[in-house]
Length: 179
Image (cartoon, rainbow, N blue to C red; front, top):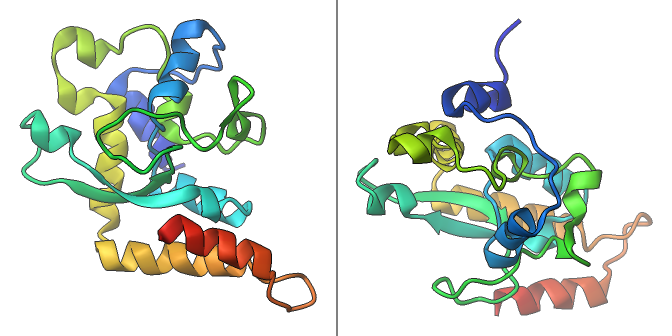
């Protein structure tokens, strides 16, 4: 049986899934959203949460010299729109990630916790969870425009009621997110 994307990230990073709820782990969600693979984001969109996602530019690998460019991806939205100011993830409610119990938590969030990653202890950033999750977007190969189109379609789908009508309130709320 072929290795899944998640299993590959676990193998390369040396990290195992964690569901710790300690103060240090919660601080990660309070500071910035975790990133996920294209498969993670598709599952989140299909579950009806596209309105809480955004197109983002992951630049950590470039800043650390691990890759030569930023990586465009779909990721959870922060609770503010300033890319340089830390803010909680849009899925962080009442001190917990609401995606965790639904089995939808992005790969980085499932694999990182309060214990420093082996990659961070050894200085081998290319083995980190974040780097290996970001690589899945490079391998995915979609452009920023293609990702924007995919997310916009998922968000538009969320505005249609089961009887085929437009949920105007939800539509306006999504438009406000893009303003």
